[in-house]
Length: 246
Image (tube, rainbow, N blue to C red):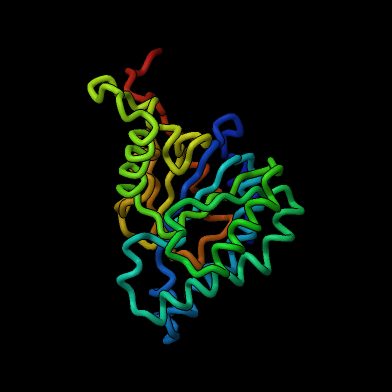
């Protein structure tokens, strides 16, 4: 991945986001611009994930969440969905041993019960293999939707508190039942590909995130692009609803 030492020096090292979330948009358009099948774009985008994880760890990011497959993506052509599922299996098989050796912990969030037995088994195996790692946590959102996450958190909370007074329910009480329980809320959301929306991604966890949109298509998002986002983030005045003080 390309980098720029001058750019890196402009990043405030004391203001590195603890948790970055990325909507990896633009794979299909990247391929179509080159008169290739959309699936080639997905393969190209997946190929850069390992390097991005390593770059984030190097910069001091502790959590990186990638939107790999949304609950709405099932509406895509069947061959594209099949390819995405196959790539997920291949990625876990090919990359996880080296990522695990680098101290990466993997966590998959979303309703994986709809995936095939092989993929579910590989996900569980990868999570178990990396459970004790602490360099950086890679969270992969697969068959995930923010609205689904909030609804299932309430259902799970209610199942364990059937006699509770709903008028006394607080956000803090629901948080342990979210799919991201134990993971801090997102500090920086990056969306590639030029669109400026959150697309039902981590709706609860994005409550106070800084939103960074770039026209760069996901297969072209490299360390230089990451550093540009980090420089932008480090200049933000994050007040969390408070007023600026002198």
